[in-house]
Length: 384
Image 1: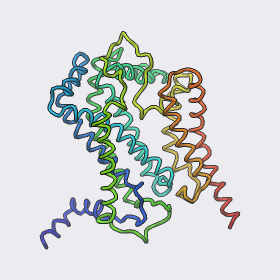
Image 2: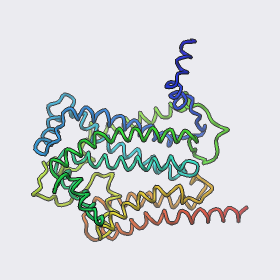
Image 3: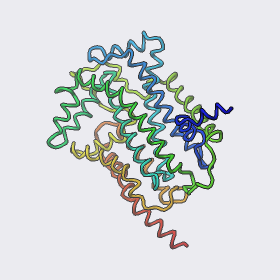
Image 4: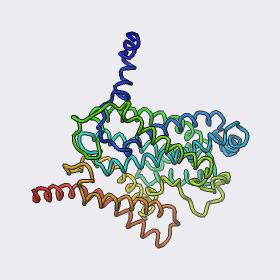
């Protein structure tokens, strides 16, 4: 017993104990607070399946597509690895999007957790980059043309735009050099995301978790183990069931059928679309007629997310006690779903007009937020 206690006092074990077992947790946390740990589970699944897939994948334009088919047909369990990795990316984004919207609803970005939120936005950006370059690797029609369209957006940047595109491509078109560097980055970036996730957790544990009431719960905390790990475990089981349905019954539901056609630079698909989790941002991009304007609009999306903790003026965190913000929040959710649908539609009327209105609605939320805080404070003071 004495030996066990001495081992637990070692720096490494003490750190794990402080952050996982004895971590003081607000006693009123709901299941909505389990998406963070589920996102960590998704990241582990992606890294493990990605390492095994990399053992059989060949990053060459003449062999990449066939190597993916080789994994699916000839490698023992290869189909399972590939479907887990491909659908795992979608599951990862579903969980992270729910995690973000939960933070928006309950005001988890408010002081003193600004750093936690900003680190989360950085992780989201890294996820988007990693998922995009991973979508290129199967070297199907959507992979090739998606890479061509999205990377060429950098050419809109004044003066250095064309040089950036040439650097991204490794030449004057999307070719073998592009595929090689994308494969290298796709292998590296998940480990960067893992490191950022650890920093995200450390920053969170500095001030403790927010809670559904949005109040200071420093006097009402209990240890994470054995009280809250069960809630996370229930979430993991539910996630495993949901994930398994896609893997075993609808593995290609979230993909595009054109990506089962080998990349052909001489044949352009009728409608180029990215993966579903990029569609809201893609809809904002194409709602601006000017290429540079579209790039700036995408940048504005992430600037708004970064700025959120600093433009917030409300003294109340949780939307449960902010009736006006609650309605505004659900309008934002509906707007994002509408943008996702618009992004999957052809670039023609009336989808372009609807996309422009929905894009404006997205930015209006962040414009109204500072004013709303002052308005709610005034209403509360008037009632008192």
